Image (cartoon, rainbow, N blue to C red; front, side, top):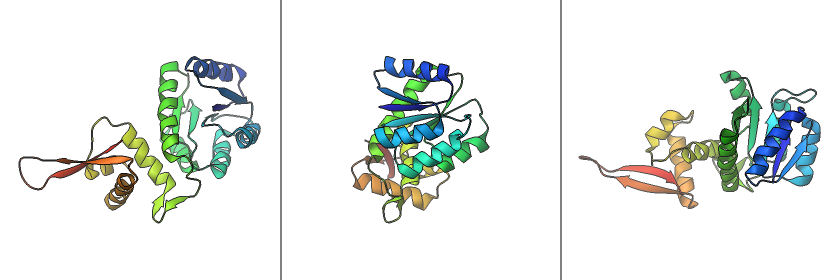
Length: 200
């Protein structure tokens, strides 16, 4: 089930049509506050929230949703491509962004991907899933790996993420231990084999 939070009825209609075309059930809210209330009652699998809304904007709504649930995917709709806006939303707990005007193939692929991530992190209601493993950092690394078609080394992953090498190493080991990732030993022409990692 997907919750759409947007104060524009036309946009809600468009998103509902796209979601129903892809066989997802939809519930709707016309404001951030009513959206959070509906989220509490219905416990959807994913939330789509608009950035620009009267009363509660998308940022406040995202923060409130994240307070209630640390793992549900939240996709933010925005016409604003500025990095500082993206950073604010990521810090508030957003999972992904979809730019307006909405393109059906893009939105469907984002929803599919984030539902997959949501299944991986479902039930992780605490900030830390175990000592030293933070839900947000885990989500960031999983999200990155889900977008990759090839197995990558720790250095290749770390280069693309704002996370220290040692941290990436620890989280990858955690994913391997949980059976959510695999290690592939890559033998080059010389020296020790390089370990590469891929989500299962």
